[in-house]
Structure formats: structure tokens, C-alpha cells
Length: 82
Length: 447
Image (cartoon, rainbow over all chains, first blue to last red; front, side, top):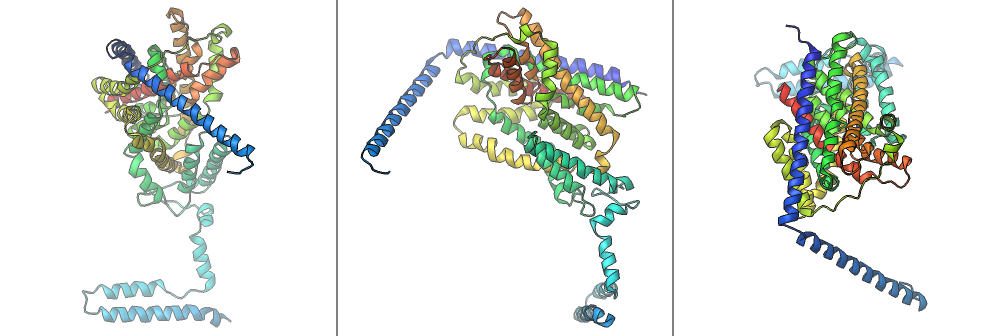
């Protein structure tokens, strides 16, 4: 039997686009659900501690930068090479 | 004079005969094998004048094979090649691979893939050496990881380890744009079927139509995965088309994006993305694996490998593994993938009308995917509370991160300082998932 390529492929298109949309739509719902659950039951603690860690790292960096700058300035003014 | 020329030859012959003779006498008591080899050796060393030797050697050169094609010469896989494929076909393929080198080196079009593919194509068209056969260097690579769809999965693992789903998680509905862009795949599937049915130009089967249309997903590994599963005979042309068009995203997409949107729409500023908790990112790969396992197990090889890479990255405890996937592993596999795909650029396989058809359908597929993404984004903008710039819809074709950068650039042209990059990354990574799902659907139809 001669297969009608176009009508077959249109059926594939309907099936394919349908599944792709259903898949990603369910994914959207799940992403919203998990964001809601995490925000409500496992809230900020995680991200707050993360922020704190980040800021302390930044402070550390600033401190190191200040020390390095001071040492460099000291060496420069005392004519040493390091 | 002639005597002097022949002397070394005669000496060689003499020693060989003596050597053969002594061998035969040594193995004389064996079961009659030795005398036959002696005879063969004696036959091989018929005295030849130097001119004949030179002529015989000339017959084994590549030049001779190129200018004297013969009926019935077989390629590495034992299939007879036409005389055209043996001579001019090879010359044309050398020109084609030089074009690929030009695109990779001068134009910087996906050099990581076009360069190895081009070199594989160069080696595949060398006469006599037959490197593409099962015993040949390229044939071994091809059978090792492309014929069995293995390499694309390793690439997917690395891509997963490099992907940040933060932008998608912070604005989940943009995932739908990644779904719309898959219209490029299914729309061009219908187009390819119509072209085969109503014109005499090409004659593709449904399987072939399906594997060509996956070019519209703008995802190289997925294209190779599907092509080697559904129609390995078209693999070379499909992979070259997919990677070339991915490289051409900045050229193909902007005109379509401008044609389908108004200046006003392109100027839309999107609200800042919310901050995503680390736990959301950690759970996300598990979410997509479970979802594909439940809905579409055929897509779990691709999505599973992708999710594994991403999970390793987001877990934060196996940085060594995730680093390896993102670097050494993906680089090694890219070399093999490129050479293996290049091995399919043999003249007798590539220089056919089908290739032209594949290049055209692939381009249409790309354009259709871009258009569908932009149109859905326009529609969503009408109904959404927060404004959506339709340009980010074009990023729904995968091609990460090129498509997102293009959306960003076109947006910045309309309103300088408007940064759409992160907003476009959402549909962009959703497009990767979308094309893996589309691939799963096609596999489930045909298997």
C-alpha cells in the first residue's frame, strides 16, 4: 500500500508538538510547585547563609587587597624590589 | 649499463630464492604449507626492469587512482563506487572540506566541530587508503561511538555540566517558548514529506524525513543521535547542515525576528529575574529525569545524560567529575565525533541530490523554529501580567548560548542598554530539553 507521506507526517507533527508542549508545560508547573515548596518549607536559611558566606568572602578579599597594597606601597617607598 | 641496473634486483631475487629455499628445507617435515609460500614468494619476485617497477608503483599512487577511475572499485565498506565518485567526486569533496576549513578558521563558524569534520572528510576521500572501512582509522572511530549513538550522549553530559538553569527556574513560563521553537522540527518534517511526495527532486522515506527535520532543533548532538538511529546513510550531510546552520544563527535569525515584531515590541524591557535558591537548581535535573522517565522513556538517554552532568555540577560535592565532563571528556569526544562524522563525507555518499535537499530543508527548519518561538512570545506577551519581549522567543531553538546572544543583540539595537541575555537563556535551555523530547517522540514513533 502506498503510504501517504504528507498525511502521515502531519499526524507526527500533531503528536510531536503536543507531547513537547505537554512535557514542558508540566515542567513549568513542577518548577513553580518546587519554588513554592522550597520558599515555604525550606526557606531563606539556605540562601541567607549563602549570602553571608559570600559577603565574608568579599570582606576577606578586600582585606587581602588592602594588605597587598600596603606592602607594595611600603616596599616602593623603601626602595626595595620584591 | 642495463646489467648494472639489474644487478641489485637480481641479487635481491637470488637471496630471496635462497632464503625461501632454506626456509622450505627447514620446515620440510611440516604438512606441506611451506612449499606453497615458497612458490608465492618466487612468483612475487619476477625480475622487472626499473621502468616497469616505476610504472607499477605509479599505479598505486593517489594521482593514478584519481585520473584513472575504474569500474568496480570498492570503498572501505565494500560497496562499489561510481567512476565519478572516484575521480571528480573526490576533487569536489576536497574543495568542500577546504570550504569547511575556511568557515572554521577564517569565519570562526563552530570551529571546534567544523574543523575535525572537515579533516575527517579530507581523510575519508583519500583514494586507496580506505580509512573509512571497518579496519580503517576513521571507520574504527565511527563504529566506536557514532554508529551506536554513544558520543552524542557524552557530549550531552558535558553540556549538562555547563548549563545553568537559573534563568529558566526564575521565570518558568519561558519554557513554553522552548517548546514552540520545536515547530521547526515538525513543520519541516511535513515540508520534507511534501517535497518527496510532490516533486521528483528528492525521494526521502519517512524515517529520512524525520532525521532531516531534527536539524530544526538546532542541536548538533541530538541531530547526530537521531540520524544515526533512523538514517545513518544521511548522517554526514545532516551533521554538516546542523553545525553550519548553528554557526549561522546570527545571520539567519535576525531578519526573521525583525520581520515578525514591531519596533515597539522589540523595545520591551523585562523585569529583573528573581533570585533562585540553590536547592531549586539541585532538584531540577532530577525533575526532568523523572518527568521524561514517566512520559517518554525514549528520550531518557539524552535527557538522562544531560541531567547527570547538571546534577554533578549543582551538587557542589563532585567538582572534579563535573570539571572533567565540561573539559577533557567533552573535548576528547568532540575530536572523535568530528572525525567520525567527517568519515561520512565520502564523495559517493555526499555528492548526491539528497544533500542539496537536506541543506534546504534544514534551513527552512531553522527559520520555522525561530518564527514559531517569536510568534508564541508575542502571544504570551498579550496575556501575561509581566511584559515579555518577543525577541527571546527566537532563543527557543537550542543553539546555546548563541541564540540567546542574538536575541540580546537585536534587543539592544532597538533600545540600547536593554539587556535580554538572561531572559533569553530561559527559552534557550528549555529548547535543549524540548529538542531532546522531540527526538524521543520521533524515536518512539519509528521503534
